[in-house]
Image 1 (spheres, rainbow, N blue to C red):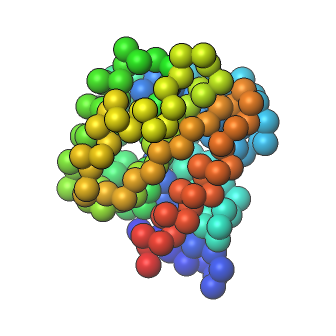
Image 2: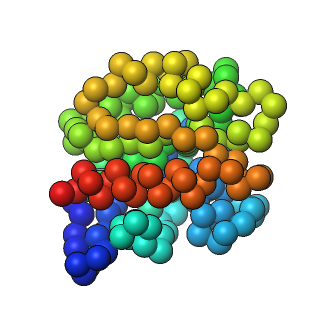
Length: 177
């Protein structure tokens, strides 16, 4: 779990999950490099250390979202302090699959109590569901085993990214105490 580097900084292992093509890797590198960049699909995983946010240094494990890779997510659950789950909020036909994958996380004993941030990504697209609508569409209100939040983001416009990461950092840091 979380380790202290100094009185001000705490280290946390974060899993960055979501179905393929949700924009996970683009969102992560947008946050790291402060701008929209082009990425390729993640075949396995990327590990990046984010600069401290709200006194929390995050080692982010960006795991691929293809079905064959999702079966291996569980290999990385041990020692996880928080999860960011990215959803393509404009791809409604995949919301059932999103819900199924999210609820597998909620039901996993190793992740019991780990805070989860759901990112309703691609808010710039005309058919994107709002964060509030996404909460209802994937039945998030049923979840009582984990503290969770949902935020809307767009790497095209930059909207919501800092808010989501800052609030998630505070949530994880509070959970580590």
